[in-house]
Length: 415
Ligand code: CAA
Image (cartoon, rainbow, N blue to C red; front, side):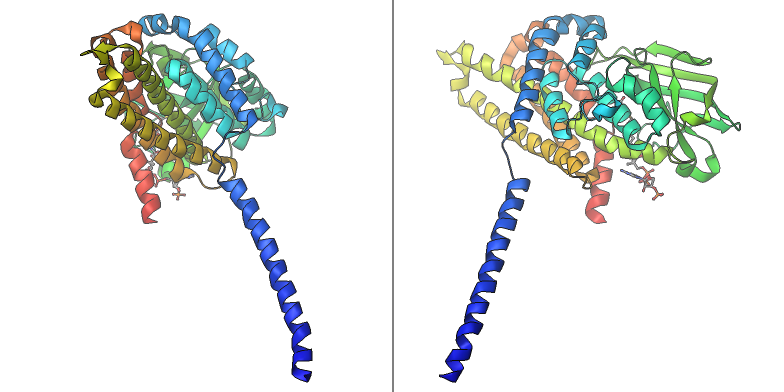
């Protein structure tokens, strides 16, 4: 009796504490699950998607074939994109931006890229390589002076890392920034610079102290019009022909010391950190190109008849559409995951490389299939898929080739 008397309160206490424990763990994990595995877009994200979709259809689509043919930069269209708040999407409103998250940015990038990848690369460079980098690492003065007009769309930015002999091997910078006390003397050439002649603000990587290797590289903010800064030839490209890609030359350009981003020698890390986010943007661009081609191929396959029925009813075409739908959805999940990791302030270096590698391979593969589904019509410009196929190729090259993404991924896997 005595034993059971003692047992009862002990049992009750045990029962009460374990129930409490289970109650809290249940709700804690349920909360976590809701936070981490929510596949539906929020109302805000759906509005961004709708706005980007309408903009792409109504503003970009009408002139996209002509701009591609004439290599015409979408200057007016980019101004309207800025009015929507899409040129500084992730920048805080304090610095002229829209204060949105990375997921909003990739959703908008996908929709714009479905129609016009030339416009979306201008948007991507301004958002993730220039304004994000300035907000994350710039000084307060740099943010006030340079970030605000870039984020509100008054000005356009460019990111200048690649050189004639430093593409994938980005540490081999030949452009020099000699320390002259109160300024740097900048000399060298940069290649394949997106927004080359339309930008006003350029983030230029240059070697200050070659003996220090990549630790001697700085990132300098160079303004259009600085004496000695020359915008060279425009590239005649296979794809994204409406984008503005140039060689830039710097001949004894005096860049004030206050235009250096971060500490002396921070330039290479700045470029790498910025490119990690940039790759999420290009992955979203590749996703949009693939999804745009898929949507066109699907619609065409339901209209076009051969051998007495719509071609979508032939298994040869239906299976292509099934492969496209599957791999595009997988690419979208990878892109969203990388964006989500960035928004959670978790490490996204590997996730962004995986998303870019996969989405760009999917874009190349399925734009070719979209042309194939269209048959002869796919080979002419009016049907849009040949342009998407040409545009897809660059997503496997810029902001790190597929091979560079594999370097980043394999190092992550093996670390
Ligand atoms: N974040 C922070 N630091 C990083 C980093 C990251 N994501 N990645 C590398 N670093 C650091 C390393 O830690 C190392 O620093 P420590 O010595 O202090 O440890 C330093 O940077 C050098 O790194 P690595 O030793 O890894 O350098 P590497 O020579 O082996 O090169 C690479 C690595 C991944 C291949 C790199 O050179 C690279 O990304 N190359 C591709 C460049 C690229 O993407 N160019 C695109 C041009 S921009 C463009 O296309 C824009 C446009 O217009 C559309």
